[in-house]
Length: 361
Ligand SMILES: *Cc1c(COP(=O)(O)O)cnc(C)c1O
Image (tube, rainbow, N blue to C red; front, side, top):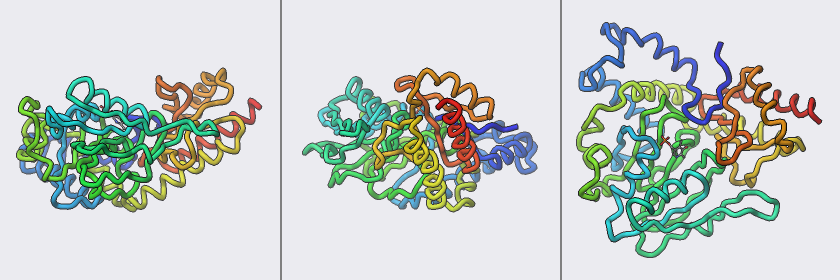
């Protein structure tokens, strides 16, 4: 049987996507070989790759003046690729930090590539909640780009507003909330995301870049991280993660069949409200995040009595609810409710949380 998988990434994938991949695994469409065995340059595979890109373009309404690159190296690879592709040696960039991942991106740039300006954009409010202060997201005159993370997977903080950065390109990490709601690609110079949270297996990273930002990479940028090279070779400068790219295509079809980004947003609001509303009224659990900034995909919470953590996780597992342990830097719990997590799974989690609280109050 399949469990309800709340892991933060790699994470749950829709049953129908897994089943399709399984059915085609040994023999893809009568060719007598599987996708994982196929040349990435064969006409059959190119069709798979192109269809996936076209579907992503359609789902995200990506304008033609943006290129879409299918890469490897993960979100962290892009933390390096962003300054290498955009930041001149004598330039500087603004980093709007709202949690663990934007801080990691800031550090990668500051410690290895150049002048990154840190803007702390969260504070603890009078109710003790972690809250985003949009007024801190001010670009510095002369900045090459401004950077932010649209959903802080570890902290459970999501941005629903964007700062006005004027002519300074806004670069964003969407690793954990891509395709979970509509976003306006036009507002960004570049978007980066790993596939292993809302889309596919690990090992695939997508970068969407406005084409006028190409051609600026530093001379020593490794070719495999150079967006201009990848654009020129249509993401086949070297061997891509062909299987994850194929799985991404299946997931894009599934998202389309389930209402696209609007459909995903409705589902994700329903799922996350069920848990947040219960947490707020429970008197047994608490979330640290201010209501307006609560992530719809990573619900981070604590038991007021932390001595019960191990028992909570063990009993959850008996109910086939797995992956609820919080990130090591925060402790506590985290339920990741990505696109593929069904409402049914979240209802099971809600029921378990209620019963656990009743049994221990
Ligand atoms: C998971 C995650 C990353 C790191 O991704 P890797 O693929 O492990 O490098 C970066 N940013 C965000 C927002 C994430 O959720």
